[in-house]
View (cartoon, rainbow, N blue to C red):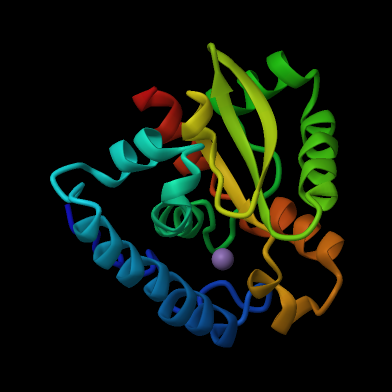
Amino acid sequence: MAYALPDLPYDYSALEPHISKTTLEFHHDKHHNKYVNTYNELVKEAGMDDKSIEEVIKAIAGDSSQQKLFNNAAQAWNHTFFWNSLKPGGGGEPSGEVGDKIKADFGSFDKFKEEFSTAASTQFGSGWAWLVLDGGSLKVVKTPNAVNPLVDGQTPLLTLDVWEHAYYLDYQNARAKFIETFLSSLANWDFVKENMAKA
Ligand code: MN3
């Protein structure tokens, strides 16, 4: 099925000063848009356009002959998930069932933050850091390039894009500062709660 580029779930300037309007314009209108357009061309050529994008991602993961289709499918999907992982006035320690689950599975919110920060900062080169549900437990994982946790049968709950295009205009090479800002001011715990409820 053709995949539509979603609008951002907030205004382009809504995440300032943490993520600038310019970054979101490039990241959404140029990068994400290109992944979506390329995916829509390639999925048709591959004769797989009767499938949902999630089905395509799972079906061709690890198939080196379909690497370009996989990369564009996963990047199209990952970015939509990333926009929803951010919200104005987000971040900080979540309360309620999400906060309780984090404490139960990581020991404390600080332990979770430490694991997530380590995953995001040690992903060498381009990739993603994720909070996932794996067999009922919360876990932090990192993935290279376009890969996402769907290919390992995990349920993504929250993600941070650590490709340089996600932060370079606002943070230059200071990835650690971008990660810290995501956790303190942007992470969308409502989205995590929705994803936990659907899992
Ligand atoms: Mn990106």
